[in-house]
Image (tube, rainbow, N blue to C red; front, side, top):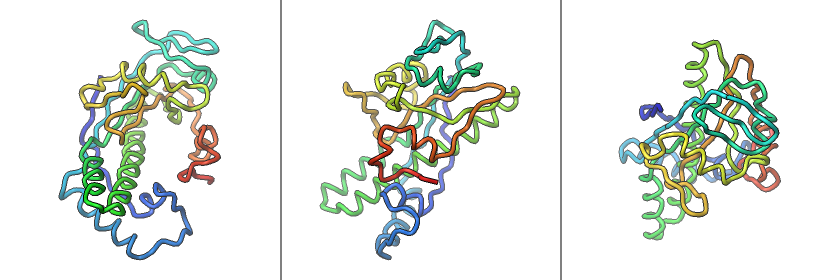
Length: 229
């Protein structure tokens, strides 16, 4: 089960603003942009980002309307996966995190009464997770292409047809302990700046635009971070 820790992350101010609900064209005070730039510059100096990815491929044995059976007597449940990965030869199960240091700094800011710095750094952390996912998807696409395969777009627990309870299942399919990611009793990941996902792998896999992915999400009507184009 591979673990990768050396994926470099370079963030833009616009990526952070989107994660704070401020998309293109939004009016942002110059001092906020300056604060973002200052905090971004401090990331490497303070070593607040510890990006890590744990992932594994599983051959698909069979699937029906609500379950995909995998090698090793493993399975994933929910009608979404068989519906969108009908031709998958394998599933890639992926867990990414930027580690606990950034959110600890966010908490420290809050304790010191520096709420704006804390909120802004939290947005930077969310943008960092997004960038880590995007960078890893490029790596895994290259990796499977050597076998003549492609990757689908990723989906995660909590999307319609893929129960959030499958979160426990996913963490059991990768080396979650090696990148120090755990789950609370309610299914929240610790560190919070972590995410899990599944992708289909095969000769011809369907990809979606980010807007199409957002359209599938249960938060599509209320999410401030969704992309509409």
